[in-house]
Image: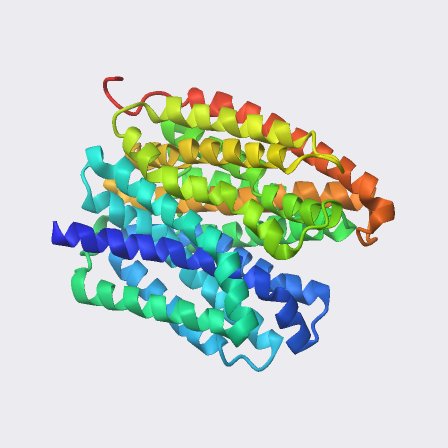
Amino acid sequence: MKTKSIVLIIATVGSFLTPFMISSLNIALPDIQTEYAADAVLLSWIVTSFLLANAILLVPIGKVADIYGHIKVYRLGIIIFTLVSFISVFAPTIQLLLFLRVLQGIGCAMIFTTGIPILTSAFPPEQRGRVLGYNVSAVYIGLSIGPFLGGILTQAFGWRSIFLIVTGLGLLVSFLVIRFLKPENADLNLKKIDITGSIIYALTLVAIVYGSSLLPEVLGIVLMLCGIPGFILFVKRQLTVTNPVFEIRLFRKNRVFAFSNAAALINYAATSAVTFLLSLYLQYIKSLTPQQAGTILIIQPIIMAVLSPYTGRLSDRMEPAKLSSLGMFLSAVGLFILTFLGQETSNVLIYCALVVLGFGFALFSAPNTNAIMSSVEKHNYGLASATVATMRVLGQMMSMAIATVIISLLIGKNQITPEYYALFLKCIHISFIIFAILCAVGVFFSYSRGKMHSTSE
């Protein structure tokens, strides 16, 4: 029981660290720009470089973890993440900070890929939904308090203090992992890694993710189009090699796994840009301060954080397909409510939409993750966890790409000034209509995945 509690603490704090870092650092970007005199494009790479390194390595690291042990990879990942966070405190140039963010993305990929498998291995099937709920809750607690604590730290001590706080938490987790968790033995039956496939996968994701960040520029379109043949080549290779880095056959043979991951991708693609759009809406259209806007936007992640442990536990007794489908439907309803935003819209409508979205994602995320992890054998836990994380990152990039393209087409490179408020509201309406439709389609994949439990209560 003691070991299980320690595993839960390690995985929970690890899951809190990276979203807290992302959300708190976003608040500090203006201060970083001022200190380094960086232009907007270079500044955006503080976020993009982290996501890109993360996305590229999630699946290959998942395979490595399945071979050499999840605890070994997690331990190395938390050490890298902690060490790089500490070095970032002293970064003299933005170029070095960008390089360190890439290394942080690598460490984050190692943490996120292995944290869920460690939890899944430590707890029996009837308790997995509950602990995975705690894991999801930790993610949204990190997202919730990141902007507030990050703002306080930045204002009082400077943006570098954020990296110091993360370093302290990382040291705690590193100590617990080294002191209490015994590394597993390597699986000699999975010794080979498809290096060529990993390279094709990495180059394909670079083209797609980097290309999406450049849309609607021609180079962005070209890169994303180049990603299509790369993806096809990767899939064909994974179906023919003896030791694939990504077990594509799982998608062909395992309906629960395939449809649950498709549902996750759709859900993240439909909901990840909500905070971005609402933040701009509240500050430009409603003339709220960043602190006032943040107070409103915190409603959704708080509900997610509070409810996720309960919905995860509920998925141990009920079919995840039913819970996740209800969550996806509620997300569609919340997004549809946001299509009615206007200059005179009452904040009450925004509160209602965020509450519905919070309930929706809480009902969707933990049960959906429980379904994915419970649908594969233990030797594929790392791969399954990496797939979940990849769906999240790709969904986030897709969501931002949709919003960015719409804004670029209607407003262009102009600043959002009062003369463009009407067009900006139109961008919001179109974006939320698309996102609501995506969630409606996602209900089909979520409900059609099949049963996880042998008997449905």
